[in-house]
Image 1 (cartoon, rainbow, N blue to C red):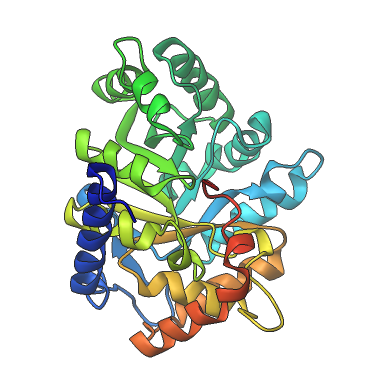
Image 2 (cartoon, rainbow, N blue to C red; image 1 turned 45 degrees about the vertical axis):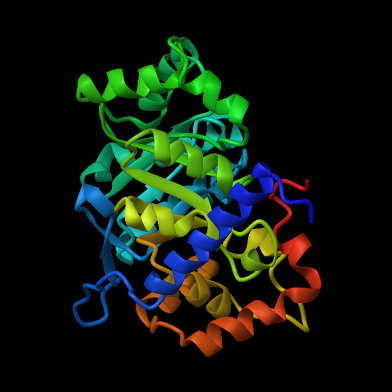
Length: 316
């Protein structure tokens, strides 16, 4: 490899990431649990005790014609101890927020509610916030996030004088939003640049057992988020089912326990039906951290298909 400044920086960042992970991978966030309740961890600098399994607003919750099933899933999740719900203005073009809002009108006080803006401008994001509040039937969002930040160009637009970050800051100043976050699953280095340059409260990132084989979020982003005491939310745990293979990862228990063993606050998973929800909650309630050897074994199982199990990443 030609030794250029660009290559030196990439190697240095990767090496530092590996070093920091080696220092933190066995330091699990404290678990708070009573009897058979949902174990909880601290959501970074917010101080909120979040259940280690949280409800994502995709799958059934973003599909038209599934209002009855979606409301049942949301209510059942809260009944089972889920206290964090994640959605976005873009999910189902407002369907997800609308279904969640039908439950929030009566149970808003029971959950930490997160949504997102996919618009990179101030004006566009403020319009989305107004729509989100109406659809979610609430006057306050706990966590408002920049949705799916992929490129340096995205960051330039977001942090411009008329960028989305101004909307996030204004909403927080006005008491409409409590905390600010950023999300992404495309490029760990772009998100690393973002959290280096701005003091976010939370980050939502892609984490699964196939991650370390290429463009790793675990090695190149997670340690720095830990260092900054961000609330860390994991997504893409089953990679929309692509993590599962007969000769690879075969169970949701393996997929969830791998990510929960990392220094994350919680994970979000989109749910298709009540049976799936109850299985995931049961896995979370019985969770015990895996050993280094067990983690390595699960990573090795994905070696032959890691690209498919991480289909959402930048392909360069």
